[in-house]
Image 1 (cartoon, rainbow, N blue to C red):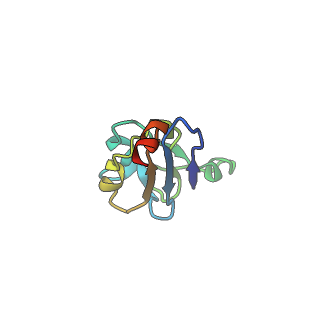
Image 2: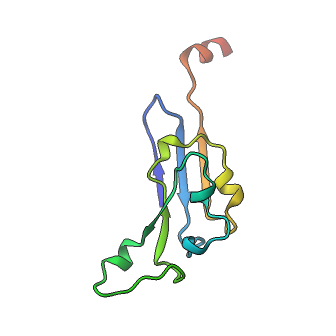
Length: 107
């Protein structure tokens, strides 16, 4: 899953979460959703599993839960989540906003 913001007043942030690498976020020893200082990530039930009638889900079953990033505008690009992730499931591309005055001064 990949999400990109396009508001020109906000930094460009792209967060990629590999659900193939992060299969059991509820029992992760160093979860990104607890280590992110901005609270960008949450754990949610996998919609594919939940939509199947009478299918129990478990904290420990691979694929029953997944990490999502609904608060991307809060991301500061510190990449603590990437450093703490034991499976390497997170990739963040962060491009700060360039102010018009700063671009003119650089010329």
